[in-house]
Length: 328
Ligand SMILES: NC(=O)c1ccc[n+]([C@@H]2O[C@H](COP(=O)([O-])OP(=O)(O)OC[C@H]3O[C@@H](n4cnc5c(N)ncnc54)[C@H](O)[C@@H]3O)[C@@H](O)[C@H]2O)c1
Image 1 (cartoon, rainbow, N blue to C red):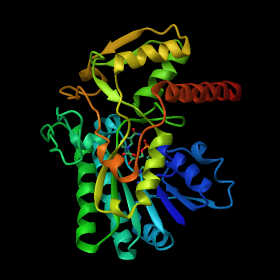
Image 2 (cartoon, rainbow, N blue to C red):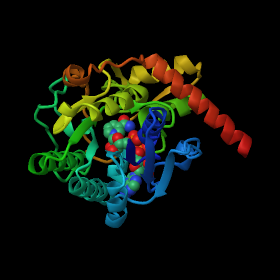
Image 3 (tube, rainbow, N blue to C red):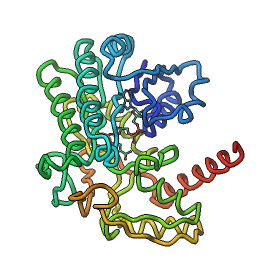
Image 4 (tube, rainbow, N blue to C red):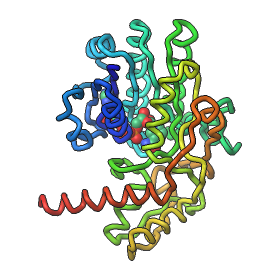
């Protein structure tokens, strides 16, 4: 199989690369290195079946060439996260909608199977727990730019499903819930690497809001395994699947657990959402996926416990910090 991964130098893309190379695929990674890093993929670039293209998904000519030349596409490139949407709203909306449109259009013309990386943010501020794929979505009003990340990803989903309906494009949509593991960076606000970094430095851990909000953290190892299986399951085409883990933890307890595991002297510092993001910022209290649908189609069940995942992240970040210190 020749696999193309857009956003291949990113956190999830780099893990997917590793798994596809192990499975014997030829892998082309393309990325504009905006939030992704060469360091994430440098070990794979030595592999004879791996190549890297530095470019953007909105480059129509480039995407036409890359998509014509592959057997299947994993579309992961996106402007990612709530931090990014608050700071760079135009960039986020344009990247997520226009980029996906270019990729889907070329995929449809060449009839190549495609995975679209969506997000649990698509559910918006729904309070119906757990979130099921066919639930209604609930967004705040359009003056709150926070919801435009969710809306832009929802448009990607509509477009992928429309191509499937209209042109039979084998498109599979995966809604990732909080995904964590080595190589994720805290630079763009992702909670686990941000907490681990503060704990390893014995600095205060900044918890946004009252810390009672709950999330379920899925290990990237389980998540990329699910993505590959979905792409290999013909019945998945034209459908949407939650991908993540089902065990909730409050953000406050997450911070405390990271302090224990790192034996840190860090304390918790509570920051109001209005200060962390923007005035009027709305967060959701609980976010938990139903995994019934993905379980019934590919037998998916997370294999990693939260402690195992946190251990992997802590080891990775310790290593990174040692490398950074020795290079200075
Ligand atoms: N990590 C999570 O918890 C999570 C949760 C929900 C959804 N997702 C989705 O999963 C996908 C991967 O996210 P990630 O966590 O690996 O984040 P990431 O930022 O590490 O990966 C995104 C990659 O896309 C690249 N990119 C951005 N704009 C591009 C463009 N115009 N052209 C080419 N490349 C571009 C970035 O440089 C980066 O390498 C994204 O679509 C994201 O929305 C992730």
